[in-house]
Amino acid sequence: MSKRTEQLGHEIQRILGETLQYELKDPRVGFATVVGVDVTADLQIARVRISVMGTPEERRETMAALEHAKGFLRRRLAEELNYLRFVPELRLILDTSVDYSLHIDELLRRAQQQRAESPPHQLEDGKPSE
Image 1 (spheres, rainbow, N blue to C red):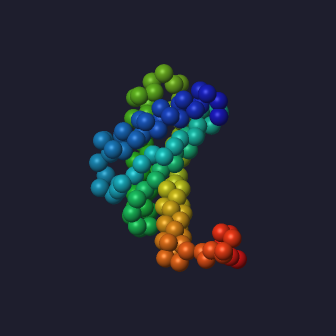
Image 2: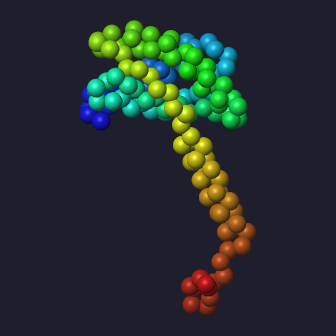
């Protein structure tokens, strides 16, 4: 991404994040966070990565509600980004990277706990046995 598209992506992320938090009133929208925005070089499409906490069913409902509210979100962008000739089309993508990092963190915690419960045996020369 060029510097301009990167800056626009950050600005879109800020605006959408605030809109989701303070203005969107749909009860189906659970705890959703805008994780990142990638804008195409021609500024026509913005891929919005959204992280949603909750069960798989709650995530589906939240993403469906956000898809339904896409017109409202794009209109809010048009109000804030009035210096742009065109407002990018929003493509909403469910981001599961937070789930993946939580899973990795849990695996590391378990490995650390197992190591604490049964540490590796030390030989007389101080090297661990194989």
